[in-house]
Image (tube, rainbow, N blue to C red):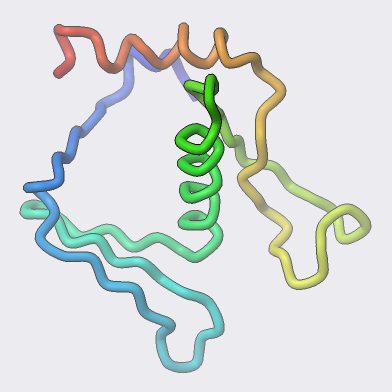
Length: 112
């Protein structure tokens, strides 16, 4: 990823979400999550939703943790669990302070 301050960031508040649909489409085995916003619809695969949930739980349920970073990683068959895809979002090796320092720029007063 390039410098975080150079990327286009879109903020969505709860009132911008029209509805959320969880569905396992016909002929599929895994969940898809459709998020309907006022201006677009995004579809997330189950593995992405699972990664978001992991990040959320890791922060909210921990007494001091304030940041986690999950990065795209290719895992060989000899490493990953049976049934898991080759490409996964797994914890980075960066410290919490590094993550906070890099990404707090997104929430600066000029970017709200």
